[in-house]
Image (cartoon, rainbow, N blue to C red; front, side, top):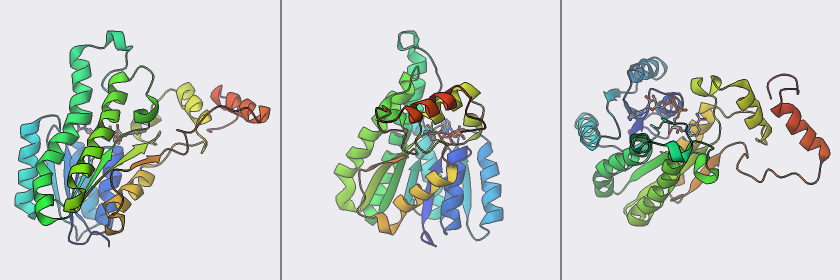
Length: 274
Ligand SMILES: NC(=O)c1ccc[n+]([C@@H]2O[C@H](COP(=O)([O-])OP(=O)(O)OC[C@H]3O[C@@H](n4cnc5c(N)ncnc54)[C@H](O)[C@@H]3O)[C@@H](O)[C@H]2O)c1
């Protein structure tokens, strides 16, 4: 029960990874502020009430890209619980898949707004309270795309890279006030949206993933829980890859068999789901 008496705000709590983070923190005793633009946040609240009966939840609908809505949401959370100890900036989206030259102003602005300005809005709203109490945990869910880019998802990868810069600055400016801010960079994680990816894309991606499988939402939640814990007090401004090793060099010069295995997986001839 590492989070007994603590209050955690999770954005995108109606989604796959956000729901898992909320469940994990609640299972360890945190009260939860569940924020999402979508009504699925109520399902997460119901699931928490069943799984962790002693835990209090507040489900809020807000668009993280809207600074007034985020300010109001944080004010409502503080009015209910008195403080926010942990902020998990998890809400995010891919709104556009297009070559850069065809990306429209509003498409670029939407991904920047949700994936980068959204975390900024929430961080700005919670920092004064955390600094005053001399304790705070902020975890930003970035992406493996922040390191390697993502073909035809330029707005997404740029926004997730920007989130690493924001993470560093929170650490530089607030570490001395007892606040940590770290980024988690998931690789491909098994969520309903990922399950809908075309088979060829899934097979190719697994052929390039040393672990040969997607990650699970619980594997992301476990890392987030550690970063929110007391034990992680000296982990600050870190970028934690949770990607089955997929960020590593993919060149193979030492084994024809490994190359053949990857080609077989990528072309769907390896037999079964890789
Ligand atoms: N699933 C993956 O493979 C993967 C990989 C790398 C990074 N990520 C990141 O993890 C985070 C969670 O992704 P997921 O796979 O659970 O996706 P998801 O779509 O299941 O969940 C995202 C949630 O964010 C909410 N949301 C979207 N825009 C919002 C807004 N403007 N304001 C408030 N809430 C909003 C959605 O309604 C949804 O409930 C995202 O930031 C995503 O970029 C996911």
